[in-house]
Length: 135
Length: 226
Length: 224
Image (cartoon, rainbow over all chains, first blue to last red; front, side, top):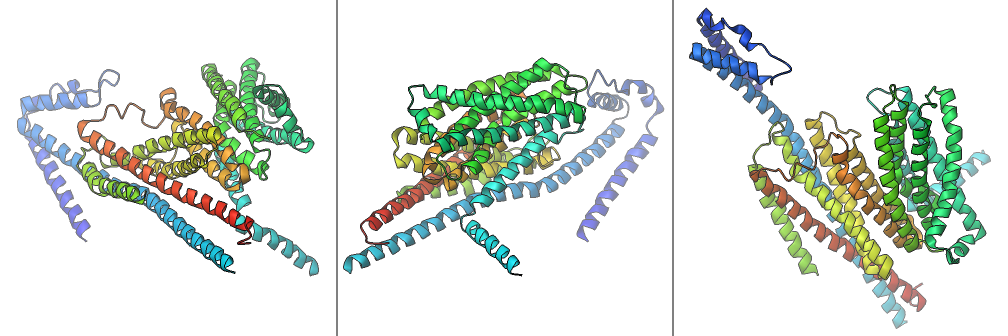
């Protein structure tokens, strides 16, 4: 129930952000999008981030509030991705640590049991020797 | 009915002994696991193809034939009681090892000479491609296998569980050579031939043989007694 | 002897349960792999200690072959067991990390395959000790030397082949926040290794002396 509510809240926040970004975009002057060929992705010459950087640069020069809205939406998405990754990976990390300690603990336990059996055998042998000596 | 009862009695006797020592089961399990591993290297690839399959079959056959050759080869010394004679002779211990290993290696090469054309016939492997490289791979890997195997077989000679333990200790040590053989042969037989890869694996086998023959010579001196 | 072991164990526990988790928790998150990378602090020290154990087993085996003193054999046996134990830790924590980092539990690349083979050599070592009969100590000493010869193959495998596994270059280039938990992890595992080695060796020595005493008593006709 709680998860569903959290998801709903997240969805609401994204929708609001997009709407605001969208509405901001609706009011962005058309001249900001005049040189859109600048944002083409030259696959063999640059990284994937480069056209995005150019887009933000242009927007900041042209309509800063729109640029800020875009940046905020992206930041939210990245944070959400990180949280998902962390939640998934957390259980694996705990499992790995647990297994490491379990293996060591089991080997120590095995050793201790062997030692106990050894001492018992020694005691038994001593008793038999003493009994044989007496007779 | 009595027949079945006798069957059960004999089976139960064997199982009871086995339960107490677990000797055969644990070594069998280990050997089976090693076999599955070997087959995984040999056959499991992104896209299995004729060269990969043929190469895997070839080298698993080589590995098995080699193991049989090793145990039979040293069995003879055991039955004849000649191991002590060999070790007491004025010949250098290293010479004894290399001599025995050469015998095993030659028999392995004979087996390979039969298996390779058979593979060409049955599976359609391109066995006539770069025969020089193929022979080099086979010779280098067989020599490495034979030398390391001879040391282990010699070491295990006085042991009761020798056949079982030979496979168990030989395969983990010799598998890098077998993998090199598998990958090298697959590279030679691939479409198109990846000769650079094949040369890499030949170099690997040279280094492997150098290191492990040196270690084997030392070990034979130090460990093998009658 | 017992007090030394106790001190070692307390030290290892202090490092392992107090200092290490604290430092690991505080270590900076790695790029791309975030939390999953923290398995590295357990996986790599385990493999380092496994290599150390291989060398201890090999050298102790050689020592036994040269001197024929049983204490060398006890050390070798103990170290051989520890290779299997620390190898098990390495081979389980590794794939758990790999499942997140690469999406698969296992891949037959050079580093993983060769380290699995090294581990299997020492499983075979344990089998030889168990079922090798009276000459088992010599046989296993010989096998351990082959195991030692295998270690360079495992270590340098990442340099010669393009493998999935991260290269040896990761450790020298660790950032400042990550170096401390890593070194502490090695220290912790080494302490555990020494403690377990000493304990296993003591148990084996005890068992051996027990059998010798039993044989002496049987010879003297005191027991049958």
